[in-house]
Amino acid sequence: MMAAPQNDSEVRPVFLIGAQKAGTTFLHNALVSTGGIRPTMEKETHYFSTDRHRTVRWEELFDNHFTGPICLDGSVSYLHVPGTQEKIKARFENAIIIATIRDPAQRAISAFLHNAKNGRDLRGLSDALDIRATTSEEIFEEEDFKIRKALDRGSIILRPAYEHHFGDKFYDDPFWTFRYTFNSQFDFQLGSYFQNFSVLLFDFRDLVTFPLVCVNAIRLKIGLQEANRIDENSEANTTRISNARVVRKFLRNYAYSKSDRPTALKMSYPLLRSLFRDYNLSNRAADFKDTPWYISAGYDDLVRTKCEKKVDDRTAS
Image (cartoon, rainbow, N blue to C red; front, side, top):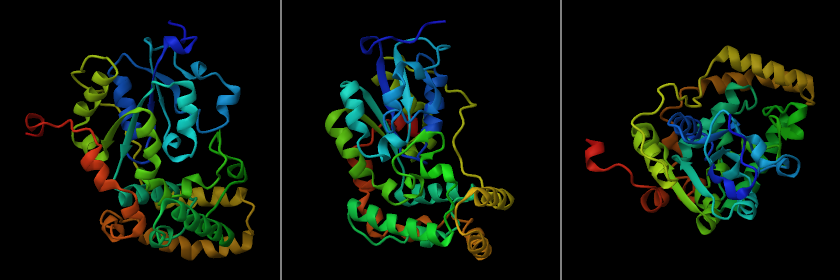
């Protein structure tokens, strides 16, 4: 077993920064499956987006069953939490950044359903994504107001621990996971990364259609040979909806919440009925493509000018 690298000169840091619900779990697992890359013991470390960097050494996060100097740290919060890239830059000036983007409406809907299936967000889809602001800063403020309003009326459920951290990782923003439209502002969030790092940007559609081509583009960039295949067991973090699961998760979260219990429970029934009507959302993305927050994301320009063009005519055929 090879010991973890002990200093920065011994590692070649690669960061998979998101976006959330844009294929990062699949890409992470596919990259690791091809060999030559040392992953962290947990895929989402949130090391540089939280206070963990103050108390834990980055080298201690990695799985020593893998060998080699290339260390892959993947956390979707690295894209969405402000100030993260400055922390990465201060530690690893020459880090390679891998980012994925997805149609903003599809990404926002998928993130909404991720919370819905876990009983955390009982709003209807239209209510959750009804943001009229036109700039990233204004989008954050308007969405923040809506989240707080939904929390007050019981249609967003926060377990007490979520007021201090998200999952097991400390966050300054307890509402991070509910910021569906703000977390789709790719042009705004990627800007500082493009200015400070070498960035490989991929569109979700290419990952789904030509995964091996995308993986090999990354391997060549980080100094590894092309792979012949990726592990067929590489899993995507898909959103599967079960009415029974939503109710069970909601009741669990409700039991631990600090909300006014009679009011929250009374409101839960119409909210759940409304939510279940929104489960068939495969064609709903088109409803939001003319909204200011969708246009502000800059998705079409990023795909046209920044996404790595990996698929040549022979691959496409």
